[in-house]
Image (tube, rainbow, N blue to C red):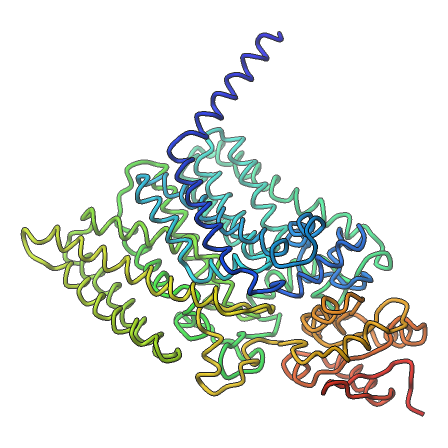
Length: 617
């Protein structure tokens, strides 16, 4: 019996070693290490990244209660408006190294580099090592992938788990293993950002249908994946829902303290339908959310185009070309179908969703856009689409990319117009290369290939460098030179995000907060980002009035009055600019009005501070 056990161990060990020394593993490791170096370069410029999640990490280290529930404040009054999985990833490093850029941002860097490595393995299902390597490198060039891999948002982990799920359903051979692993990875995506993870489901279903066409096997695969997907989230959600409301933080992002409402509403259907009434988060010329601009051209506007640049158009082009592509095998067909659905579903949803559409959501389709771009480049050099109609489609696609780059670069400060001119010339030459006659056709394909690689990689690399050299540490991260656009257009640069929080903080204000004598919270203020910054800068509990956007149901007027009467909170910090930028509820406005008319005010470094222990006589 023991001999058989040892033999099994030996076979397993040999199999693992063969995988580790394989060329695929070596190339994937190269992509990963390259990604770590590239994405991690100068990352300290971003400070603690998103202060909202950094403050939750700070709170998680205070006690296990805050850790499990994802409390946004040190006293555990309200949770963040996402499951705390992203926070959990940062806690071990922060516990060892302290609260700083490296431990807070490293998990996202690892996830971003890991996604590129997984993308390489996906590409290997339909192409060679060389072209798969190109695809992996292209992933690392997509501006939004770079920017979201350098901040502690849930987006980098979400993309990683969705990419891993697609790879698992493509590559794992056994039906039971493929379905369970795929479902579990999808479940981790749900635990990261709730229902947004379900956007990958059409891709997973397409692969299952193509890999397991017999209805009995398909049914087993779907049921197994579905059951496995609910496991990770239920392990957290069930204890949260079973805990009495008075014994846990208020569920952030809700008016009714209901985790199901958070899942389906704020982080689910409400985002699509507009029930979460925030509209677009505009970049230029707006101080907050504006009316939704949902349309097929939304992603080409200044608010969104810098996130993907030419990868958006080449993704669309790849979907069109693949409609006529005859796959060599079922696995190849499944992989390419998965990429098309992944990109198409994301493109449609992000083009038309009505509630709270942020530019960085496009990181979800960065992987398929880059992989489709790699496939289009390979198709050109290998002459897969030689018919006049398809060459015309390729020419139109490349011309569109070059023309749009000219338009997009005109939005930015002086200097970027040179890249616009170079892109236009390169695009023109690339288009001509498609129509060279006779013996020159092969050379023409090479010219077109190099031109398209330039149009995708060079502008993206320029934007990546701008991202890496422009400090951003807010809740609405942007790719490329976009933050400079505000100044270029003579707009207030602080209007680029919904809330710019505590940028006018001073030592006097910090000292005042730190010496508060309240039992639970030193201060309460509007805006989750503002509260997080005050807490991070002072090290004492600060809570947001009515949650991140000032529209939650916590605290109620009665609870607020009870806090004040019981000495639980001492100061209310009022920033008019933050208040004007938030979609405050009527109830929140009433509480603000009540505070400002019933308590004494002191101006500290230009910030209005109300002492809640000193009512007006």
